[in-house]
Length: 528
Image (cartoon, rainbow, N blue to C red; front, side, top):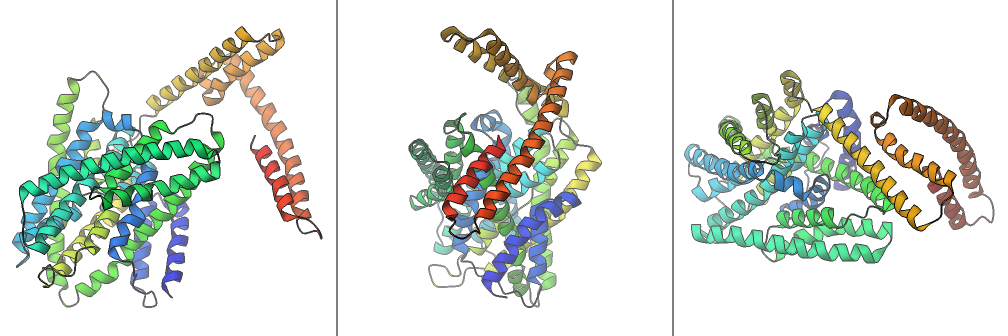
């Protein structure tokens, strides 16, 4: 098997892992990691050969962009306290604790190298957290916090990592300089993100074509990441800023085709890139096995200690942080997503899985320092990092569904239904208001006006049938059954038409382009 065949195998696994995970009740990223581990131990599977400095720029931008599309800036702003405590403060605390412990237990490990290890294992993976949380039916407040933590913690961890690596390579460290680098990195990233978001928004308005608009959104995350890194800013924060800007200002309520097609395209991208990323984690087991040759006991012992530090520091931090957030929350007038019980806090604790960013940072550790000497204890750092990644991602990922079920942590479906009902009412009222505006300037026949008024009400009923009284619901249900029957018959008629047109494609003298154009017209008609 060569590298290209391996890539196709991983992509196929990414597609298959989704339905398999749904059937088994397990997260697809965890299954892909296990699949990668299986491939890694097979003799005929080659070692993966991806330059470490390309892993983050290749995988993170689309994954972050896809995750941000599911949220909004206002959601982040409403949860700034819990996100800050997890995404910034907890990363600093975890980095410090891991650095102190690793510096103590690993003989000869310099403090700067120990800080680099702490920084690369500190951030929970945003993709793993959202993928796992989304499949388990967790309360929306927990999903919001996990998404926010996962999206912002990489920013802090990557900056800390670069500062520590620079100190280890050069042998010099300045706390003032490190703090300044952190601030400048964030400022540059936000500026780049806003400017690119504004520019992309203007381009989207100019393109006026769904295919070109979606193509632009595929390029924007990479452009944002690369430009920010070139200007010594945080590529991760730049992508987040750009994505949040576009989600806030680039939404056109009437651009139905672009929205539907874009949603489908980004779902495909998210599935494939996520699968490749977590398959890569399992495949990198090759490196860990090679490093541990003849030293299994010693290295496993160090890795186990660091895993314990990473896992229990998160728990010891979450308990007082949740209590503090609750106290502050009680004094506020606005809603904020916070854990409401010890059960939800435990689920948040066990959801702290490491993943793509940690792998990329571990592999990106330089081979040599500025003096030409080997980077101190690089192999040991990489092995410990992979131990933390495997333990948290595989063990916690596989047991989290059981833990959620055991603790009976579930989403508040009644609240969600009430919000859906509220949106249905607002949609119907907006349609009625627009009808009244049209009636004020156009002379509509009475029967047309009454028909449009019924349809305005049916807009809300189709979203949520519970907004109508029993008589209206029953009439709506009868109408829906009648429409479904008509659509079934129409669908069979359109199917016959499509088969006939498609058969013409193979006839002598038929122009495939014209056939495809007619077929596309029938396809669009079938969606109505």
